[in-house]
Image (cartoon, rainbow, N blue to C red; front, side, top):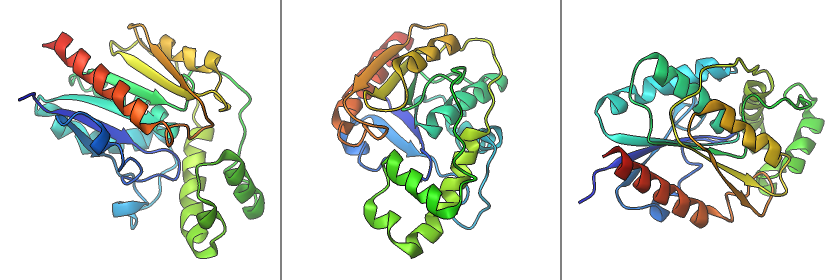
Length: 240
């Protein structure tokens, strides 16, 4: 029997620990999915929302440090905001001298050093903000047009957008972790931006491009899970 590999899933803007619920059955049996819940949503809905990426990374670190201490191999997957949080989490892990993950999966986001024109959505008036959500995709029409549901989700989305839109990158020493990068060919995230992840690791990155917009991972979840399984299994073999 193969030893367990824990795979931590970090949510995208507006997401929760339930966002990756369909991944588990598509991964190899010995890969244990560990969805991370952020304050202010899901099981932690009574807690205050956080708007600083570094503070959130610290929160995530405190959730997983005991699992890392256990000595079991692990990986980290983050989509969009989750990819940024995953990057900051790696540096928290390094700072605390804990073992690195055997692989980091960054999805739907360019490398943190990539400089592009920063759009500010979190301060938009209510109607304009909701129109932007429609443009970005990923949010069901039934939710966007449901006033009660939007009253619940809008503060979460604004807080998460603030996390991403107010983050400023500080160059740090390269990490000794293999990276795989996923992106959609119709997303605003360019291939050039995706390649910037190479600046953050000493290992050659692997880029996988899929047909689709920012939420390309929804129709391509099976293919993505196959890549994740292969990389974690391969990297575990190298470690052992």
